[in-house]
Length: 234
Image 1 (cartoon, one colour):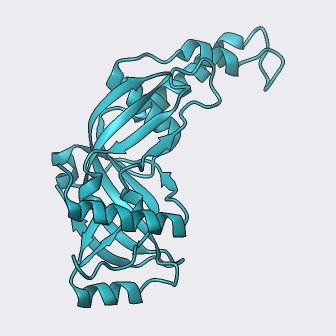
Image 2 (cartoon, rainbow, N blue to C red):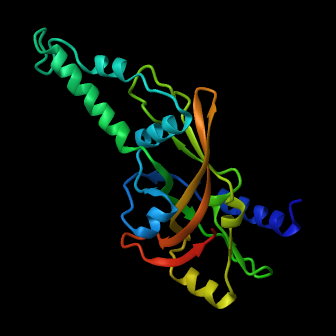
Image 3 (cartoon, one colour):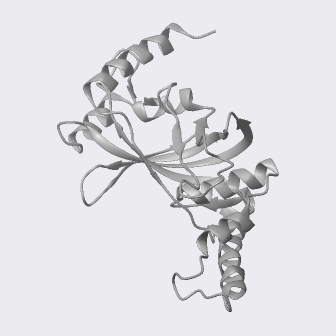
């Protein structure tokens, strides 16, 4: 059952959402080198859309049409391709695609960055609300947008399974005042997030990733971003 407290939070977040722009997403990928990261699973940082696409296809056991993609990249009469070296160029194109695919294998954690806005402070419950984690929020990726055929034509949605926990930021009044004082008039900030992938499901012409937020950090939205607060959920 949804509590009255959570419904009140949703109302405040809706007002904040209307007053500011929705959260937009940047993300991309690299392997974590820390022992702690390895213990929890391999971590993707700074992801691009195609990398997420390869991760999804691996999880679903779906093979990409690599041969057809390579053939579309190699045309006789372009980029030095002739009838005599066509096979060589085709092998190189296929190998390049396979290297990209293999680089996205074996990851089960992701790191993303969202733009968000801090709500007005709820003095009754001593809480802020972050529209980046609103219940209706999801992150959209468009993998292989230049490839035909595209097994993920409908895109990939990343959905936070514990967004309601991250949505509410509980802080005492003194800390809340200090936090607001470090933000600009629009209360815009950046949220640096680490998630664990729980499952990947096929959807109509695409897929969805269900992931649990492990931790996030609030950063000032200025050019020289400063860490404002760190929150651990899992």
